[in-house]
Amino acid sequence: MENLPGSQIMKDLLKQIAATKEVFWTNPKYRSDRDTIAQLPLGIDDVRDAEARLARFAPYIAAVFPETQISRGIIESPLRAVPAMKKRMESYYDTPLSGQLWMKLDSHLPISGSIKARGGIYEVLKHAED
Image (cartoon, rainbow, N blue to C red; front, side):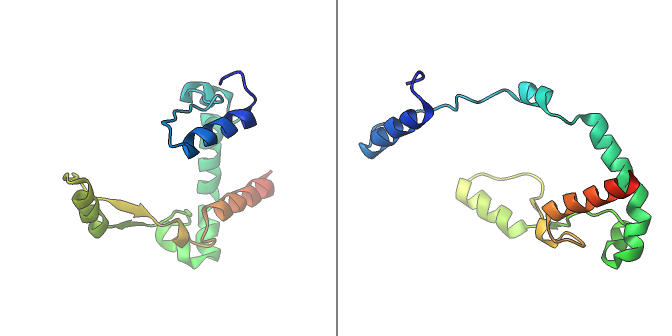
């Protein structure tokens, strides 16, 4: 199957699935994490630069967006312990889970309510600083 065009491979796989035959497919574009990271346009220096920029703007953000004062102007999603979910998972998988289970509430992100909007805020700050 590897020599067939992608759409033909999918058609053949779907036929096998429809015929209730066992199917195993691997993504021909799969790459190791090392290969992927090596080809990313951003690196650790970019991450550190972004972190420093957000820290520089934190006092301003805290001043104009009071909901960020508790985090001193850092836009972070709150975390919430979810013990009932942990119990349900332990029951479902019939195994104990050590520690606590927490949920990251991106829906409650200060200012924007969205992780994507936080990226937009960052872009505005970068543009303003540049």
